[in-house]
Figure 1: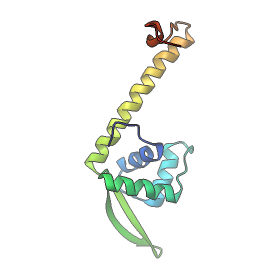
Figure 2: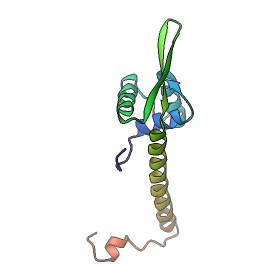
Figure 3: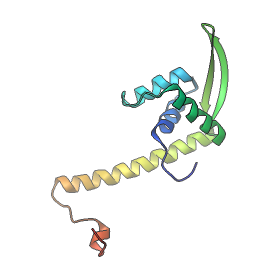
Figure 4: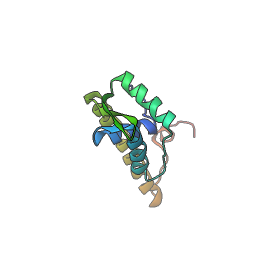
Length: 123
């Protein structure tokens, strides 16, 4: 995975698969649950994400079964997918931590401007 940020559908799919193998409909439901209902993946979006993650080696197919006459394909996280998710979680936590520190300074009135402006940068 590159150093760029991960899009939310990708993050949600990888997060869902960190809980174990799952099929498409379960991934849609899990993404909605993880996001507290903010994100409801469309089937086309889900399978585009899965195709990309398969190509990148971050997920792999994990079997299939027929349920009520319909084929369910299962997917699971690979070790590389776990590493990519861990990297993204660390990036998000670092950003959230920086935002929290600055927000606390803002709320207590201890804002002195950004380091860039303090060094003579343009506001």
